[in-house]
Length: 334
View (cartoon, rainbow, N blue to C red):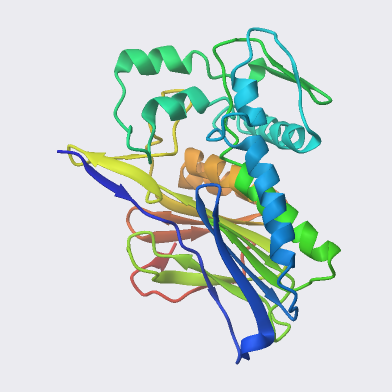
């Protein structure tokens, strides 16, 4: 009998110092299929949340595969070589997705939607597809057959479709940060599920302490924290969305080449970067590479760091990450 286990990823932000009730305003909502939490400090006009959610609604209405008339769904209904003129925002996210698809040689591929739909992990229709269905599906996953010139988009294969779920939340977090800065807000915490953007410094003008969740625990236990200012912290792992069948875990991070979930020694990976859209894509790429190659890859990038948690509860960090503090004696840094 199949046992369905779906965990909501939590990254904890440790608020330091004594805060009065009016030191920050806070709002929670549900967008992008996840919990949104926004805290804004030294600011007391709650109308800013309306502007934030108008922005998030606009992004979701354009890029979600769960909204019938979204731009992404109109893309996915194109016939062979049929063109569509996209909005600037959707075009920007697709181009960023293609950049990372190319950088990773297809380990991250925004044309993976047919495979995501086939497995349907995290929905009531999740299942292990037949080998034949998987083989037929991966034939139509190839970012190189996506064509975009300015804002004009078309496929070279009419059986293709895209999924921006791997980077749209990161893009949204970055846009919320931009909106806050435009409104002269310089201290805020933006949380979109597994994506956190720490704007500015904390109330004491010191770095925020962003806790990294213990992926082996159902509680809000952390393994440690990173000190960040104006940074994105994005975590992906095999404990976020998955199901278990015949004692085997099938998670949502799918290999575009084999058609099956990636199998390696990683339980979770966290990316610390300047922009959340980059962290989104890089967390998937780093996971796909495994710990050794993933470390080498992230170490080759500027202003990006990573924390890898292995299935053996070992922690691996990139060479320039000096701000990570481990607090849980169940884990060891290698």
